[in-house]
Image 1: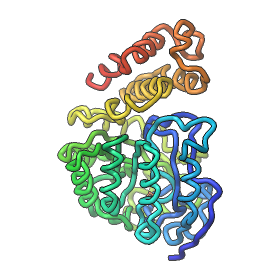
Image 2: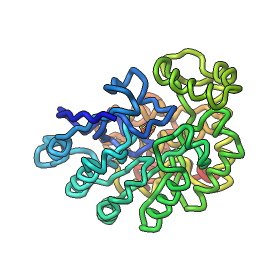
Image 3: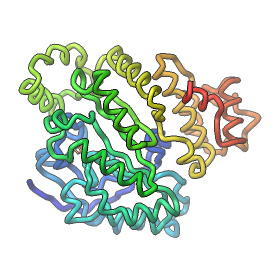
Image 4: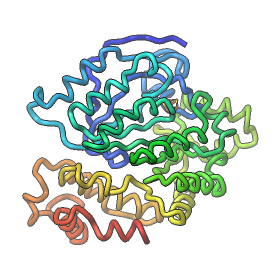
Length: 375
Ligand code: SF4
């Protein structure tokens, strides 16, 4: 393993629109590269420009905290940052990988998030996050904390093959139970499920059942992508070795394309399976509204709810106009409440969408959204 130290120019990644998976406008990568070395990790693909050998070499941004202070401090901002969860994790390196024990960049970033009163959402696969329970609780009391762990399933043996550098799913579930016990909202990113290995209805059901036993607030689900080049080659090497009979199946569903996506019919079939299991266990397939409706400003709240409605309809195999409307709203400069009478002039907004928006503006909720979640 080689550790490289670099001075970064900026740390806070600002999204062009609110991210409705994480309920976040801002994220950060404190490290580049990841010793966890998950076999399917897309951080390995050429597009991310991670230096050195992925899985062995890690770069630490040693001036991260100094820069982050400048970026978060409201006194230094002409336009204040918008309210949303600040996202730690979910990039090209786990924020709680072993190097964090030495550099403590994630801990120090949390201290700043606490100092400047932002809510935080941390996504990791590492139980090291327990070390920071004191700050996470402080943030939760003032502004709110969400802790999420990612899984490809709850099978410890399969995880040892595809996630060789991280604590077992059993350990991850125990850690989630620990945070829930401390009053912190927790979720699972069941992402990616590994085709024909962890996406079977039986194993998905076991995973969701175990998530429900620790009372998780949500499960966000997704299939695997395999980008041509380093990511795909590395994955297929392990597959050939451990599951040689599946090579043909993979060739069928992963035909060459820019984003490494599998065939649409494959994604549709696992989405339908996920939808029927999650309904049985009554777990939300998105971060529940109660965790952010008092945080977001109105346009962002509308965008997130419309995108969630869009997702729920597609999960049921239906088409939806709401994603397009959400995108148009995300581009607006003015608050929706100031143009209430002209909503239908927004691209993608028709009569039904208009009434959903007006209800959200009035109640910060949507009866249609609620119906879709329970129906
Ligand atoms: S923990 Fe995340 S970033 Fe690290 S190797 Fe695994 S998938 Fe990639």
